[in-house]
Amino acid sequence: MPAAIGNFFHILFNVTDTFVAGYISTDAQAALAFSFPLFFFIIAAGVGLSQASTGLVARSKGAGKPSHGRYYIGQLFAAALILGVAVAALGIPLARPFLDFLGATGHQTELSVDYIYWLYAAGPLFMAVQICGGILTAHGNTVTYRNVLVTASVLNLLLDPMLAFGWFGLPALGMHGIAIATLLSQLMMLAWMGAVMLKLPMLRDLQAAHFVPRRRAQKQIVAQAAPMSFSMLAINAGFVINTYFIASIENIAVAAYGIALRIEQLVLLLTIGLYTGLLTIAGQNFGARLYARMYETLRLANLCGLALAGAGAVVLLAGGHFLVGLFNEDELIIKHGFEYLVVAAALGPVYVIKHHYSCMLQAIGKPAMVAVFGAVRLVALPLVLCPLFVLVFEMGIPGIWLSLFLSNFTVTVFAFFYVSGMLRRHAPLPAAA
Image (tube, rainbow, N blue to C red; front, top):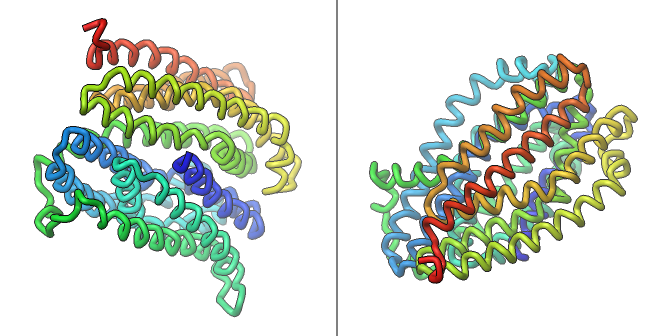
């Protein structure tokens, strides 16, 4: 529950940016949507490192080897610096051509660049925050992450309009202000979580030498982080595909897509708290060879996740028009946004099962197929279905939403049976041994 609450406020953090951008202009909201794939490269690297830190540290803790966990922690922060610099070096010069490819107009491109350049410059900061969260989660401490996210969302809520519109004598910075508010909030998060993390027994003998990159450790981190990062990049590719086709049909609908995504995340992604809890508990029990507890944890997580997804679906269907209208009063944006939310409501339970079974692969140290699931679900199938529904059947934007549903549902059914087989093989119950 603490992780779920924390993630609720994390999404609220992003909702604030979209809401404030709406008071700048509809183009500003579209700019956030267009720049999201660029920012997602940072998110993908950070989430991969977070999953790696949770998995590696949790297994070290479960196996009673704190020195291994301490070593991995230093190497994880070294990886954050390397990846952060690499993403910025590639992302900054490629931002404008990428935005042009997506279909952003000249003004939308300028607003996107105003926002994204700041975030690329602070790439290592975002990744370090994710690593701290993963380390604390591996120790069963989700309360700190929750409290930090709640505080950061409130801080961002105050700083966003102050810096964007120039309150209290400050200069009006527009999109620059929204980005700077994000960075200041992230700095606060790193300072807070870092202070708590340093009190962990595992870190008592942490030394500077642990932070020097070591090839073997970095390979292990990549092995753990890459599948989840590639899965996140597949999400990004799916977002790019959807944005490209939406912009080719109706540019203004990109803003509707961005708004609806924020609402979907706010309502449905409370279940992320279950993902992190499942990964931590299952990873520790796998390390301790307590397989029965792994299966019981999965069963309870599925029940809770499906209940949350069902409640979220009711909210999206009953209040979708109203929620989109809070961000923008344009009737066309409300129409397209609600159409997406209908599909999001149907996909809520599908996402729960897909993510939970992906977590189980990570917990048993067999995460490679997670990337395959993502590539097929978000890239391969949409590349076939989007052109089919949009260009051949001429279904317009609803065809994009139908492609989204069919792609997710098909892969989730396959993942369920595949992961069930992997669990029987690598984590057998005593009666089946």
